[in-house]
Length: 147
Image (cartoon, rainbow, N blue to C red; front, side, top):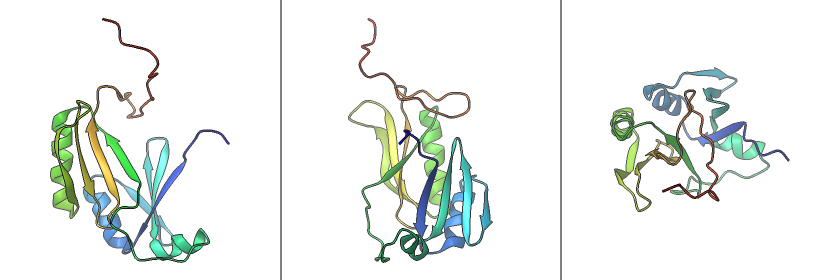
């Protein structure tokens, strides 16, 4: 298997509400057969009814849990962008779950949950610089910085 993720699909309880939330953050999606697709750099974020998604995976749908063990991340280029995005999240109906601050590793970050409880980290991490197109490349952690 090649190391690649092409789609991230979020099971949602109310598709129109979920779409409105992400579009209020500036994302632009298109709906096809009760599924909303957003282009997100080199992959796609997909919104699909939670019960339909579970059944499509051969699972029985269960009530939503508060924390699924998965966190999506959105890196930005400045601390101010972190703050701006959090304000947009609150205006759109999301919940800031961790206020923005310098974290234990030393970079500025925060976290929020969308209306279905999907958690996102928002960070300005100089260790993961963004390319012009917004993509990130995992650094070589075996190389020590030169003094």
